[in-house]
Image: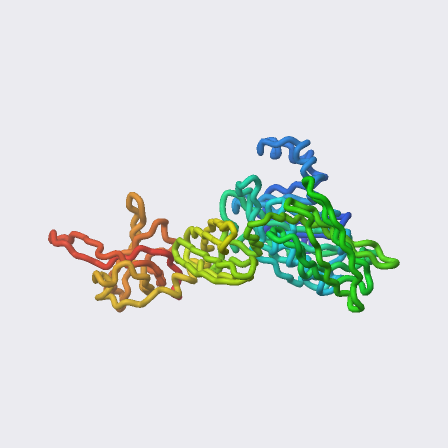
Length: 507
């Protein structure tokens, strides 16, 4: 008996194994001392160490092994995972860059430094030269081991063309800038993509935390140099080590000369340094902080000086993918008039005056929005900026909005002309399902008494409904007039018709 029990137990275990969903696979990254679990949704996963086993797949994408290997090395790619059914790609990278040398571990930096890192994404100074535009950037804590990651939403354009959009999680730890990037191409990024990234992110773990090395002296800039200016003088402000020497060196990228300015930080580390540009042109400005016994810290900026130009610094602009509210803000000069005009599902026009502007636009309705931002001041050249973005609902968002808008209309009033095109909710019983040439027609009885059905509505569905005859359902859709049938006596009988948005069980 014991032998047969063991055989039966083994068979049961095998059946359970075969019926269980595929498990996630764990990947280990030695350089950054971390691991992550990749769900089975990602049918193809590339790493620097398995490219030779994926050669057929790589070739089918029109790429060569050499191209992929070179991209992995240049971009610091640790892993690329492809969820082809959902049309998204997860890319995990780790780079030793200027930021990682400066911060090493963001969790061990103070609030000034972390704020500077976060703001650098939304003001365009981080990765802007590569074509990234960040719509949002906020901190999130992923537990005692992973700790802080910056959550961002972005679009990437190169040479004016949209490359991809998506969501990122980014931190600096163990001396690397680490990014988990959920990319989508050929469509707008959706909340479902962010949810998929969050699922992976919750499995990301550091297996070892390296001690902080000696780092450059603190240098957090609260008022950086302007990217554009029509005046030759401006002021840089920030915080560094107390009594540190702060130098701003401007170097002309043309032939207009260079200058250098130096101040000593106060006892609390704050500094303010006034810079004068020698002539019109484009400059590279290097800000340096030196303190005794500490490694020197540097920041590099680009400044364009042109008389008569109306300088505009855009901090937040619309991306290709929009949320319910879109923010357009930035700074210009005192006395300027700024107007934002938006055309689309919701039209918007507003004009303000002053150095700072902040427009909040309702983009909650689905569709494409066109933004025109114009900045004017007498005596200066007008600046005009245009943007286009699309608001697309996820399935869950669309259903929630339909639920919120749906009204209950009495059966006898459903087909009346004054109620046509209205969003309604009906509850009833499926009494028939029929396929026609381009659609499915469902018969719904709103009233049931014993085995008798009455108050019939004809539902028009673009896809085959998942409910069979007899099911009690709740239907959301728009009224569409009358559905006409000829009865056995040759007379025309009209019934209310509803174009279905979605159906769900009412039980």
